[in-house]
Structure formats: structure tokens, C-alpha cells
Image (cartoon, rainbow, N blue to C red; front, top):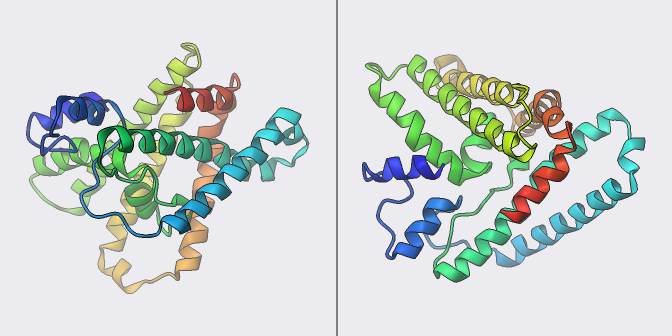
Length: 260
């Protein structure tokens, strides 16, 4: 991701443009998944503080379940709902801690790490706005936009290809992460397939919503939220989490998040 940031910086694009005020800031913005906040932060500190406390409490409960082995007595259907929490909460808390420390060190406000992805009402909302928006913006600037720019037409097909390719690149990045955290274990390809499937479905959703059929057909937010969360839980339980579970990847992944 740092390499992609530097490539964009060479063309005065991406999160490194405009150039940070100091070399230290430049190095931090390059190496870490952070981005300077371009507008004043919202005054909802007390509300977010309670949400953060609730997430810490949930992580504590999940940790106790893991240590005491309670999870082995739970039905598989319930585990499918717990494993997303195993991945999301430690990841968010670890990056939030990193963001808080860098905010103090750099002396500037940073973009939020996540934007409550469990409230997503569509795949586009989940991947484009709520799930790790800093990385999403890098992929959008470094892969999606150049592919769209090279296309001779701005049709739905070019948008479909751009979105799918960005998801394919994200899948390959994650396979590389698992390769290193698992002790160079041969990738199964499930993680890449997970992102490719989500990319195809997200691209299809975007094209359909912008078509005449999609503009006439509306879905209630509660229904779209249920469909989105069900899709994410099912696809992650089918393709993503088997890779994490293999060789106790959840423990290694959580350790990797907090150490880095």
C-alpha cells in the first residue's frame, strides 16, 4: 500500500498530495494506513466514547470465550456470527490505538479508521464508505480511477471492470498478509475468491442502481441492511474465515494487528 501511495504521489494524487509539511509526517502517512482529516471533526466525542467502551467489553467477552474454550460448544450457525467480531473488533481497536498515538505525535486530526461498517445498507456503502475508508480511497485512486480513465467509454462495463479489478488487487494483498502471518503457508485462494466475489457483486449493485430499473426499484433501509449483513456473514464464513482458522490464524492475525 505504501508503494501505491508513492506511485500516486509521483503524479500529485492520493493521500500524500498535497505534500505533508515535514519529512516525519511524510514517512508516517506513507507507511501507516492513515490519512489527514480534511474537515473539522464532528462533535460526537461522548457518543463515540461509549461505543468504543462497548466494543472493548465485547472483545473482552470474546477473549474469555476463546481462552476457556466455550466457542467449541457453540452451534456452527452462531460461530458464523462470532467470527466476524473476532476479525473486526481487534482490527479496529488496534488501528484506533495506532491512530490515537499518531494523532498526538503528528499534531493533526486523522480520518477515522472505520465508520461503523455493521450499519451498512449496501455493499457499496460497506466497502466504499465504512470499511477501512483510508485503504478504500487508495485503491480507488490507484487502481479504479486509472482503469476508468483508460477506458474509451464511461459505460457501466468500464465501471464494472474497474471495481472488480480493485477488489482483485485487495484480495491479493490480503493473501500476502496471510502468507507472512501463517509462516509462509501456501495460500488456499479462498481470500482472493472472497474479494473477487464481493467485487463482482458490488460492481453489479452499482451498475444496477444507476440503471433505469434500479432508479424505479427502491428497497427499505431495514431490508437492505439485513441483506447486506447476511451476504457479508455468509461469504466471509464460506471463504474468508476458513483461511483464518487454518493454523489458528485468528490468534496470529490478532497478534499481527496489535504488534504492527
